[in-house]
Length: 102
Image (cartoon, rainbow, N blue to C red; front, side, top):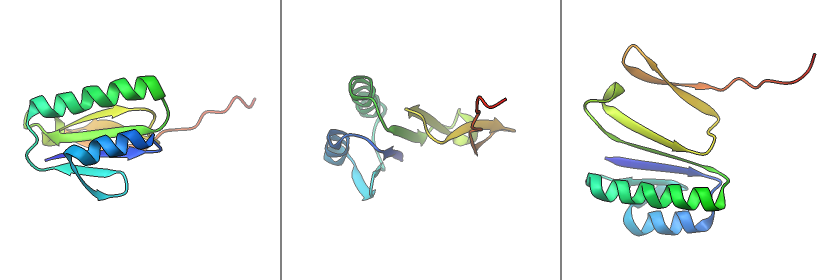
């Protein structure tokens, strides 16, 4: 199962993803049997467009028995959290906001 979640991206991302995956909720796309070659091509398009247009964030996850927790995760943009490997399990934690206050 491949899942892509978008946040604050240009409409072209949504149109492209909806053409090759099922949109199960606003900005959430799934494909139960996407092969690695198609997944890599979809991610390449996402990377190119994100570099060109900027803004928003995209997270993709898919089954990978060799990866932490049995799934692989790829991220474009700045999500409000970071993924951490904790004893072989991915955990999401909020990023700390740093201020320049004395």
